[in-house]
Length: 145
Image (cartoon, rainbow, N blue to C red; front, top):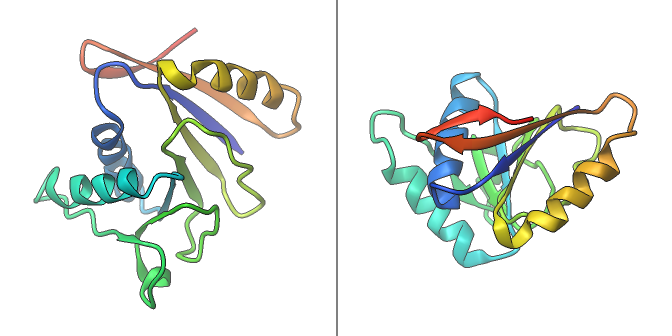
């Protein structure tokens, strides 16, 4: 499994999530976006619908009969009822992904930086785990040291 750590500095979480969701969908993958805050999930949902009309990032918040059909499902639980293999943790609070995911996108900011560092260290010795760190530089994501 690969875990990508994204340090948010220039863009707010919803804008960064929209970019990462677009890349995920372009790769033909489904995505599960997880956060504890329903307000954040609702803002992310609106941003996904409005960010790039030509890209049409269809999504839904978990809890109705269409969850399994959503290419991008927003939830407060790590439960990929939509068949997602990509998990995006939007609020900087690590959750164990479980067996079904091949990639985790972990977003954090200055307020959750210490938790992200602890998570990075906790994952370093796990077998089959690849970690990458990304930061924003001149409006682009670049791999950090």
